[in-house]
Image (cartoon, rainbow over all chains, first blue to last red; front, side, top):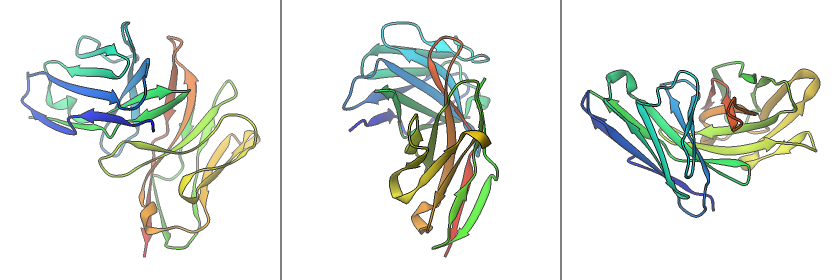
Length: 113
Length: 116
């Protein structure tokens, strides 16, 4: 149990376009989901906390207008990278909280050309 | 604020040898501590966690870690390394963010290589 999926697993987009990443909790409901960013050979950095039915809370230094988060249901949170640039290329990982533990998705590799 | 330091970004051990991955933390409150494993191009999988109680915590795949408050450490060990243990390992501490939400603060990771 406690499986989290992400879609797509990888995506390539052109600079200036927007891309949406989905995070789903498949077998449980999650009122809270988290979005992380991981640069090559580096650790995970929390970008924002997504709460179902309310606005996401962003960590310091994360542009909320660039990284739009929507948590419209108890099983789905989306991250939209708007007007993507090459420096946005990264590995994005979501997690969903269940019973005080976070369960991680497999990640989405975004490459902006 | 919480922080995590993992000593050694790369560790190599021979198959069958002891695995020791070091983690030290800084926390102003009693910490919750975690070890995660990440295989290439995958998300994180929880190996084990310490919340309260017994300081020696056993996890999956034969790993264990001991919480030592006096040393502010939470080192990960495995008596006998297996080839399948080759991966990236992250230590993390749980804290409360400025917004009142919990957050995990991760160390920079240790890449474990197993030598046949």
